[in-house]
Amino acid sequence: MKRIYLLLLAAMLTVPTLAEAKQSDDSRKPGDIPDAALNISKENTYPNSTNDQTYLTPSEEAKELIETAGMDIDNPDLIRLLNETEINMSPLSIGSRAVIFLGEWPLAYQSEETNTNWQYQLVNVNKYDNRGGKDVKKMSYVQEKEKQVSGGLTTNLPHQVTVEKMIQQKASQKTKLPLAFTTMIGKDTKKEQYYNIPVKKLGYLYGYAPAVNEKGHVTYGEVYLNIKGNTPSLEIKNVTQQGIGAWIPVQDYVSFTFMTSDTPRS
Image (tube, rainbow, N blue to C red; front, side, top):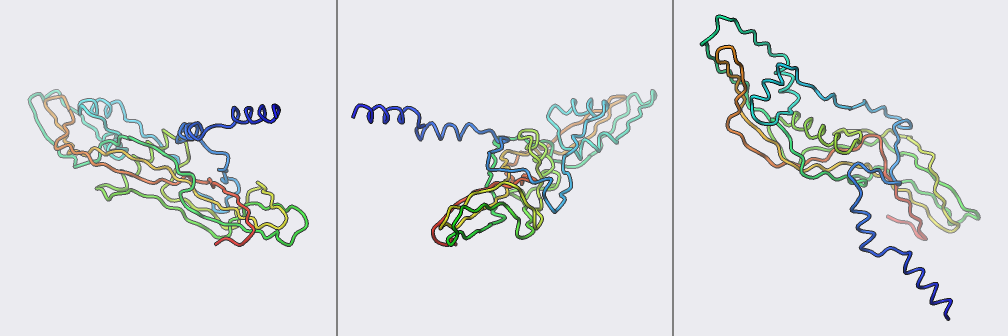
């Protein structure tokens, strides 16, 4: 009796409580890759184009202009415009003045929350019937159909494509994951990760495409280029903010769930 009591006490000390398990789950960072998720970039029969964004760096002249705006500007399209803008001031231009309206732009995206859903979309189900078998059987992942996985913004906003670039850039920096608003998984993509199916059981291997969920806000403003004498500067007017969210698929990753059953599952 004493031995049984000691065994029970040891089990209580080694099994984590529900609160501890939840705390461990919550401690996962957005870019942490779970053991159930596998990289299929080499095995994918559909060659996704590399979607690593080039972080456009402002030129020295553009950087000086942006600093005069008094607020963050990380819109790559606006930075490109400023990089391509040449302002050659003449010594005789002292006293001259000009105001040039460059348009209304999304200026910056501020991320407030980033999470990764590793079961964002079911993309494949492999099945194996071992109910009549006499030995344990193995099964592995084989993509049965070509599958496109798409994300997008949760709200329609002006300059949608540019806003997507800004959000994807920020999410990529935070998670270090390969992100793309559209990604493909090719038919017959395989992975040599094996799962055992006991005798008299059905085996099911579910494959999910993961995606990053971003929540934050975009700052918009009317951008003016002011020239007073020999000094150019940027002025931002009518500044507004818009809350926004987005789902961005993780490219070339599949997250797996393996289950066995006595009877067929729907």
